[in-house]
Image 1 (tube, helix red, strand yellow):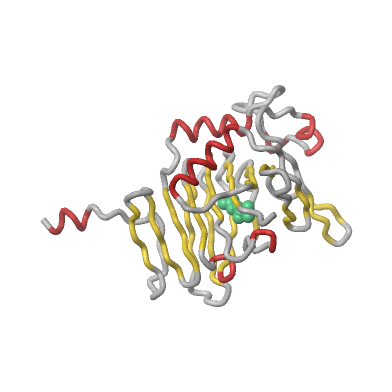
Image 2 (spheres, protein in one colour):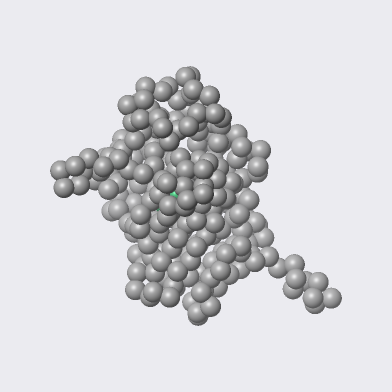
Length: 249
Ligand SMILES: O=C(O)CCC(=O)C(=O)O
């Protein structure tokens, strides 16, 4: 009888360091794992959004007046061409960083939505928010139903294939306030989300973020850990990541 109960306790589909300070519990109410790590907290719900809803989101994020999103090779669309595409729901842009006087395109496309005034400066790029639309508001509300936090903006990242990536960083910009809660909704191709502790080299976690996964970072995580989405050869499909945040306006 005991076996019956023990074997039904779910385990996360990724490994955690075997050290003290790491603790996993299944959250029956929100259907995900509450994970304590040294200096922070993570919530992971592998199938938070249904497949039907996630499929709809993949279309919603790409629909546009000119191109068939099912067949177009987005990798070969230039920044100028992208600008001319009238996306139905999301105003995607190709941002660039200024480095040693050179303009370097980010290895992904981005968009910024939120309440009026929720402007954000990220890697030196200042973004005024586009106004919310129904699809983004629906996702925001779904997340707010299961976690206590409220959000007033969202950064969207579009990784067109495995060549797109995001380098090591913490979401610790001052407009996010102290110990921000960041909720990440994921649609499309699965990509690895890596976390590493700032001072303990043995504390590394690789979390697969799948079609419909919700990941929430909270507590002091942004103070003590960095995260990244590395390149992955072999991934040839798009992945969309929406990180909901609260800007102290
Ligand atoms: O794509 C992801 O999963 C991470 C996104 C992220 O870290 C960010 O936008 O700051």
